[in-house]
Image (cartoon, rainbow, N blue to C red; front, side, top):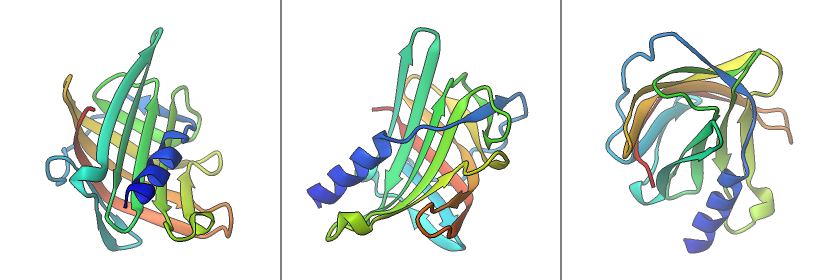
Length: 170
């Protein structure tokens, strides 16, 4: 289990792409329990294990990056990265962006890591989804998300809907 966690964490930390924040209302905070990320993946329920769920916020100069990641006991995980984070609001994944945002769904294979699969958004120039941050404090971030992601190995798609997060900062 430690190897799976290490593989997933290593992969998640390597993620970075483009998206943008809009001034739209962020909406409701979603239904995720404290310390969890949850969503539907192609209609099937996903819920992270609290032990494998974390949020980080870091700043360099005037730019702030927020990373939210949650994995379950089977090695499935969701990662949301917002570079250029500006607080509560709505951040597009893809499109004509001024802020970097990426969303990823992973199915890690601990027995054969080379067989792990990743679906990422954005995957072209269109808006692939949205992250809505409804509440952020120095210790916690909450919100909702949805995105369509593409696997570059086989061009398969994953539709991530009804996503929400309620995660303490590390």
